[in-house]
Structures are given as C-alpha cells and as structure tokens.
Length: 237
Image (cartoon, rainbow, N blue to C red):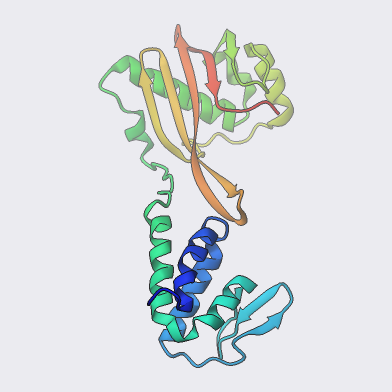
C-alpha cells in the first residue's frame, strides 16, 4: 500500500482508536476475516438502533460503530492489507494481556511448612478464617484472637470484643466447612506473620459486561498462639 491510498491514513487513525475501544477493533478483525473468507453477506451496512451492524446471512449481526463502517466502505478493496494492520495493532494488546489470577485447590500444600512453628501459625489463621470469618461463629473468636487484637482495616473497630460485635451484626452462624471457601492463591508465613492471598474478581471499569481478576491480601501477626493484629488493603467506606 502506497502513501496516499485510503489504507495509508487508516493506520494512525486505527492506532489512536485502539486504547478507547478495543472491542470495536475485535469486531473489525472478525468482520474482515469473514469478508476475506468469502462468506455470503446480505444487507452489509444496515442501520439499526444504537449503531450499524455487519449483517451476515444465516448468522448473528456484528455491531460496528460509524467509525469502522466508514473505514470498511473505504477499504473494501483493501481487505487483506487492512486486516494485517488491524491484527498488527491488536498484537500489543494481546501480548500484554493480563494472566488471570488462579486459586490453588491444594490447601494442604499451602498449609505445609518445614518449620513446625510456621506451619502452626498457618493453620491457626486458616482455621480462624474458616470457622470465625466464613462460618460466622463469633463464639469461637477467643480461641483464635488475642483480647488486645489490633485492627487496621478502617471499616472495622479494633479489639476482639469490637470485632465480635461488628461481625455479629453482619454474619450469621452457618455450618463450618472443612476447607476455606474463598479462592486461596497462597498462604505465606515468615516470622510471626501470616499472609492469606485470594483471587478477587471485579467488573472491568471500561466495560461493565466483562470481569477481571486481581489479588487480595490479608496479613496477620501471631503472638502467644493467637492472632494479635490484622492488615488488609481495604479503603475506608
């Protein structure tokens, strides 16, 4: 493709568009692949509420914005070069896409440690999470938590009694499960600290129809065989 041909100006325009609307780019690539494959098309640029679609005979319509409709008309004679450009522009997005956070189903492996004290600390925190936090059995709090328990989460008051009072209002006792239900990634123990790492799923702020995963951390300090202090990443609500 030589400078001055319609496809030449398509490159920088498309690149500027990618960051704002990657899903439109995906649609464009899909449509162009179908065009090159020679799939029969009917009413290819039909106007519908909310935007234009590339309507395929015998298949579901693919929604396109006016931006891509305009370029499809211009580049109908240059489908292959345009597809190459689109794929080249997509490549950095795919190459740098997030690897989803995965839970580790082998909890016994997570709890294991060659150091007996670290293994005991891991088990203490694990069972606290399973029985008190997830199970809602606040009557077991004194089994796991020091009376002077220090809380750093800005939404929960400090102290064991305050913890019990707070969670008694929002958590009802339920049967205690043999395993932590939350998707655990790792249990890390060092010195008197234990960190639980979890998979956390959230809605994509750029596209509410999509989800992404990140990692949540809860850290505990153990003193005298009980949980004495807690940290996490929660913002004040």
